[in-house]
Image (tube, rainbow, N blue to C red; front, side, top):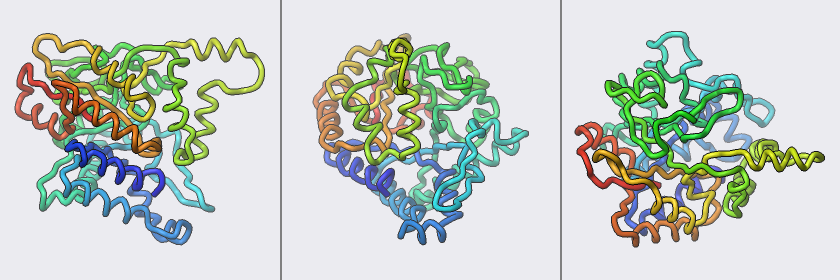
Length: 342
């Protein structure tokens, strides 16, 4: 409730005040685990998280907000034991879950159907047409991309140019651009004009790890909303350990992409990034993909301030991924102003 349902509800209410739609990436594998262990969770927590999520997704969809598919493969086969989850951290990618293309395609179909059913697709006609990989792990992606295309999912939004994962889980340093979009078929960072899926990357600019130490990011990452194990992981990632201050300085000077993340940057910084973004070439759509996370939503006022600033900026408009998928489906009319989705 504290990590997802409550923050999402407040964000949706703020969006409604500004006439802006919210796009929610629903983690369907996690939700499936909640449903499987509903009895134990209700006994332990005093409520049924899967039921709360289902009710909220139905409400958000009915109010015109957008819901798309998100998957963390480590949740597949997760167990609930002794008051905590036992995940499978070795399961990094959807491609790695199954041996055959048919299995991956069927898996995506089931999870897509689950989200659409929550949205009341039978009544509303809403379809899942966009996907984001958990922890950005969309590579190698050949089976994933084929499965997305086969299931009518036209957009992937998993790439952050310059980002590369631990243990070579993914490497997006050679992505065509920070802004995109581009078409893909076998790899999310390899442009392929015959590709059936479009990659709309999360917009970023290169900086240093030191630049990530904003008050907004520290407050979001280490709030009580963030799970304790994730806070400990963050401490390790930041190099916060005793001794060897020179190693820490070297770590903090490493180049990293600074994402257009409305929970980690100030409104002023976000607007500077938006205004300075390169203009599209050759009539490509003018889109910047923003990102945030419910567990990092600790400041309603700042989110309200950002949407107000976007609303006052000439030429900017908040749109959903479903809107972008509609344009893709229609052939991406050249030169249309799309802009900029929270």
